Image (cartoon, rainbow, N blue to C red; front, side, top):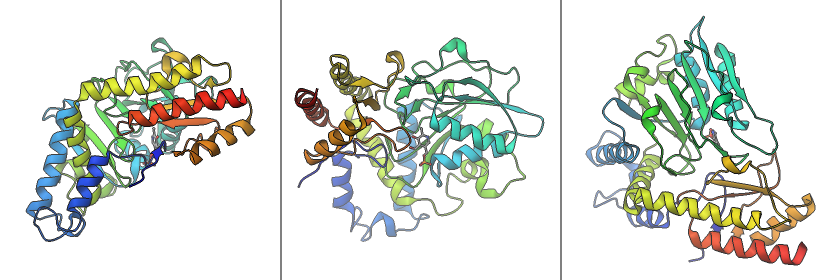
Amino acid sequence: MSRVYNFAAGPAVLPLEVLQEAQKELVDYKGAGMSVMEMSHRGKDYDAIHQEAIATFKELCGLNDDWAVCFIQGGASLQFAMIPMNFLGAGQTADYANQGTWSNKALKQAQMIGQVNVVANCQKDIPTRMPAADEFKWTPGAVYSHVCTNETISGAELKEIPDSGSPLIGDMSSDILSCERDYSKFTMFYAGAQKNLGPSGMAVVAIRKEFAAKGAQNIPTMLQYRTFVDENSLYNTPPTWGIYIFGETMKWVKRMGKENLFKLNAEKARKIYDVIDASGFYRGTAVKEYRSNMNVTWRLPTEELEAQFVKEAAAAGLKSLKGHRSVGGIRASIYNAFPMAGVDALVEFMKEFEKKNG
Ligand SMILES: Cc1ncc(COP(=O)(O)O)c(C=O)c1O
């Protein structure tokens, strides 16, 4: 077996144990005589997978019975549209922080539906960053407020969850379950699954049932949160394979131990930032206090050197280090499942590359 170190931002590396377990169960799931992909979503084998996946996730996030967890196809991008369609009515205002590419995309969708107040704007700031707590100008009486906790492209992470004064919604696509966080501060949070949760193909959406019940009723059934809450994401055929791998990934997080995993994540990021900070050659892209522990971004002195860095790293088994096509530079995405050994290999490679080219 030869696995590379995969620094891709998403779809991204999954825990090897989970892949191997899925491989073992692929053809015959626990004696069912068929794979999870082939079984009815109304049968008892699948039902157990579905329920356990939700229960494990709720336990990991500390969510009580006020919360529902939904599996919704269309990725995090459909959430950008569903949120205002459900909750932003005529004559109402929703607050959006514009912190980077993803939160900007979210607010653009909301602007198509209704009135948006941009409460802070650092989308284009270089070095990249998040708004400081006193920068947010929240609207009294807003129907909800929206933040992105980790901007995957800029490599900036919101370290403190703000008190917005209205129901807070978080796009946590790239840092969900990666660090200690009080999820109860939110009314809703969601993540495209393909980074810390499982394969691509759905968003995992946690929402307070009471809030979901307030959503618009004059939009198509499949766009209403209440459909997913009331029918436990089984109104139509859900992405069963993705939910199965999500459930296995959540069990893996539980086995690793959250505290242990969060500590490892911080340590992995610190090792790369230490090399950047000790060097006059590499230049971190994000303001230090907002540096992401999931997506580490940096530049080299020239674009030619960046291209050479990415090419030589790939040849050494360090794959997908190229920054997002919209910004360039280098990005190492080191989600929960990314192994420490891969970070150590990258750090060694960075030091060698600097020696040769610095
Ligand atoms: C923070 C964030 N939000 C939203 C998205 C969009 O996710 P999707 O591709 O699942 O629509 C991404 C994708 O990388 C992301 O990083």
